[in-house]
Length: 282
Image (cartoon, rainbow, N blue to C red):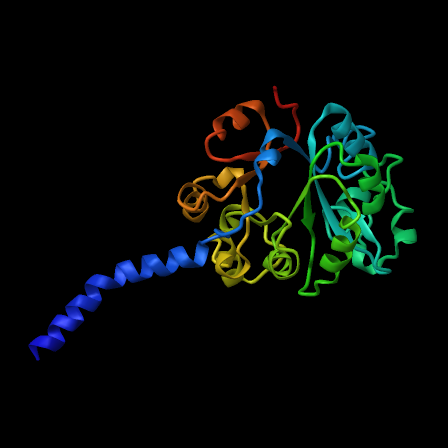
């Protein structure tokens, strides 16, 4: 009886340590053979290009990307597939916000999509290949995959295009399957996971609450082994994010910084910065 009691007490005492160890294993990013990233930290990244939706350079437009290149800023952009499997650069899954039409990009051919103008300008949703031709390796890219399902066809198609691209780029997505695909198929490409505190207004795209909770706390890291963590800068003190940066030394990307003051305030919390609405000081 005494030995049983001792075993129960021992189990109770060890439980917190076992739980903590399990948690750390769940959130652990890639630790071995992590690709070099230091060169990416030398740049700030213009969110959806150096855009202003009240001008002729709206978000994710060729004009916005040209302005970023001309100013010497890296670029963050979003890729997704049309109905006819053309890879386009657009953030939202539909064009209601940017063009006032309630149609999903996945339900339109590219010819149909390009008939709509972005934010009342002459700009249309560009092809990814056209953006790459414009940038031409002059500045680095952070490429976010917008993937509404578990179909990784877009990963294969974008990767095929990037095989012939000589510029610097990293990939990221809120969808953990994207990083998992790169882990299995292209481990040499720097891959990241995007996240936020969805309960406090980080957006969700309709994902189930358990998935959002796991994503918020980076609990898919054990499976996808991301090279970096891109986290909503409003929630910079998220415990899992802090541990990934401080303990595991995973590069940290901030999105989206909206002022010089915020940039300076988060200087010690992140390694790379995606910005919009202002020009970072040198």
